[in-house]
Image 1 (cartoon, rainbow, N blue to C red):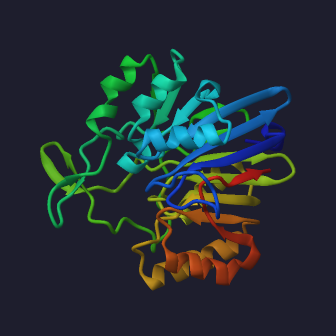
Image 2: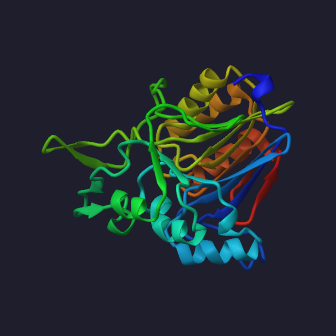
Length: 292
């Protein structure tokens, strides 16, 4: 993705998040959903990134923010977890377009569960199964490789694990060839946008692949080393102090102009991010808009 392939502008709106802006009438929910709008020349593409877990609350927020489901051009599901995928079939029905692309990793519909303290499925729910998504007329685009959504916006595809301090620590399991195994969350993908004159904007769901891994992967994909913004969940809520420290050290070296992190980031990590980045950092809230 060269400079000439970049966007003229980008807008990111937090349609759903665990918390809401002060005095906001919006509804919070455990999960995230973003509207990513890219503009290049006279073309505008509107991408819904994740759908949270409560489609009624999401649709209520969209109405308050004057975002019509009819304007959505594509959906990206960043990973399988219910708080990012539950209600996608309902949303597709509201969008009402045949052949709308739904982009995700090929493993997104796998068995995915906790077994401590008891067996609990936390992946894509039955109501949003592959078959039910297809019945809406949507076009599933399941790819391990990056998918270009418009010139200047792409998914990361499967993210290379490079660091020695980022990893899955939640006790998540899957079943492969009849065997129960630890789930490495290879389906975790993010959105990368390149804005001319600004640099890369990375929108994450939960960053299960590790935010530093994601950024380095994005730089490799695009050839652009300037990071304008990181927006989304960083999944440091259950991370050790050592991992949080090393993450922030690496982020400081990468020198993003802005970090806005919430959902699964965790309070301790948010405090450390503020101490390290000061005004460059802010907690993520439902209703926030970013114009780049």
